[in-house]
Image 1 (cartoon, rainbow, N blue to C red):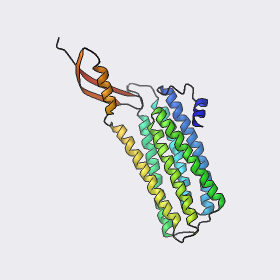
Image 2: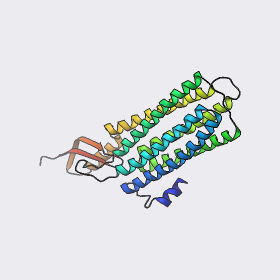
Image 3: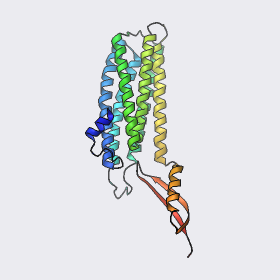
Image 4: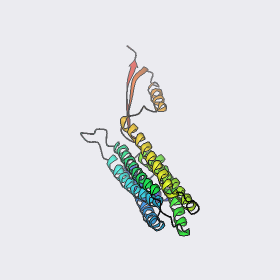
Length: 272
């Protein structure tokens, strides 16, 4: 389905190295994320309140922060395609890395709040009213999140976007968390333990770990990681193809955003 939407809404969709095309990919994924997460938030919050389930309500608020992440994705796509200026001669491609970091902070913040409410629910447990309709809606939520994981992963790999890859990872975590809520809600009908609060606790840890992991990757890109050894080998091989160049040293590679890599190198030539 995502391929159909890309073909329908993105002109010249195959030119993924074109910054305007990359921007449209980012905007499309952001709009889809806003629509899907708004649906999930509304449905889960309603079901969570009816069931009196902190795990479902926490899962719902996780979706509303995902909606905020989708807004950040759109802004990141827009800002990163701004042309170079006097203060930023290499462009603004790193805005995408900053957007990815902002998404990570949002995810981690939700995890902390979910942790707090889950602990309260364990200390003061309340009965859960689970119905067949609740189960059907939770299954629908899982399937929708799996689709969001699929399309974000596809776009992330297609255009090399760290934001989409982070969002895909978060969507998969959400699907797993909702599945845990579903299983726990059913189990809660047969055991006296505060399963709801315990599941909320597990979900909160998963959310925080996801935020930390994605944030770590974003910070690594902003600080400037070591270049890919395969890229270094390609550069060396290309330069040394010249008969006039005897060797190279001091190769430095700079990453100014997706598809915006620049390098400098000292070339050694004959004294003659």
